[in-house]
Length: 465
Image 1 (cartoon, one colour):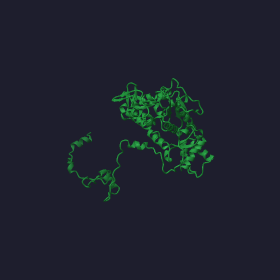
Image 2 (image 1 turned 45 degrees about the vertical axis):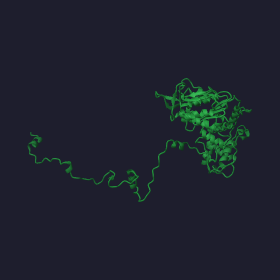
Image 3 (image 1 turned 90 degrees about the horizontal axis):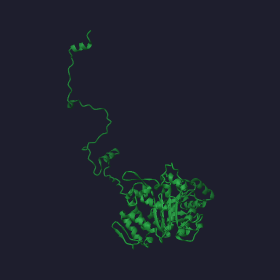
Image 4 (image 1 turned 90 degrees about the vertical axis):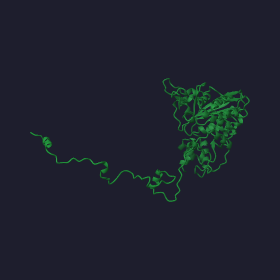
């Protein structure tokens, strides 16, 4: 049997072998459609002067460039630090709000018990100094009113009595036994309860009494890794010289009158600076503010000088205490995370807050924050007076740093305080009620806002009578 494949091999093929044509001789075929975008030849359309080809193509898509049209210049890029200035800008006055006649917050009102539940305005001199200290916060609703004002609360009265006792005035602290002329306290509470505003009142009274005021307005700036840092070998702490120089500049500007009357107790030598004993402390602080390489040493020497007897009282405050109770974004040369307590500035403040260091007459205030600040369970346990068990994974360095400090828990405002704030909102045009509020309307807004100061102002915007 012969296979069919064999017969095919024996048969003569009648087909001719066709050789492939060269590529240049192939017939040109084109598809009836295409999915590619039409590309314009550079030589077919001249480029418009001052406009890129991508922008020209965009103009062609939206209808072409009109003859004689003026091309808008692109928006220039932000300069270095300009976006941060816009982000941190704080408006303290609303010229559209009615200008109300209010008494100013003075030293006399700080110890005047009938002033509780009344509203007072910060003086222009205090506003300028507090602005230099950067103690005003963006979350505070100053932009709704003609000038910064505050309500005198019962906690304000107690704080004013403490400061009067530190000053040496003959007063009796309301509601508690006085514990000497050096006080340490931590203010905590829910968001919008008025912790930062209470510190503003203390700052205003300290400035009027001619205390030395040192303020760290936001500890968040110390731990996010945005400042230069280096290791101080003698102390083993990490210094932030640029931030310390800016802090000294604010201290020298605000406390100009007080520091110019004080002289150093001894001579100092920091690098190329030889400082005589007869130099006043204002010029001494300015040296550290102008030369960041010596800012840390100058700041430590300033605190040491203020710890001597016969020095004026000192107010040392720090806002957003939660931030320095945890690890930071900084790392050492071995790429290990640096704890906030190993930074020089937080460590120095906590040494005064814990009582390891003290002023002859002084007040140390640390305020927690609930507005975007990280949760610190170790600090919450320490402020509540709980002891951490041995097997706990919480940070055990937190509790000793606040040991012995008074804990103030700010909560809802009293009815008289809330009514004074709501009446101020009504007279400023924020609350559209033609007549003074009665007890029922006040109770309604206290219920909606839980009595918190910030929420009371917000309720005037949300609720329309």
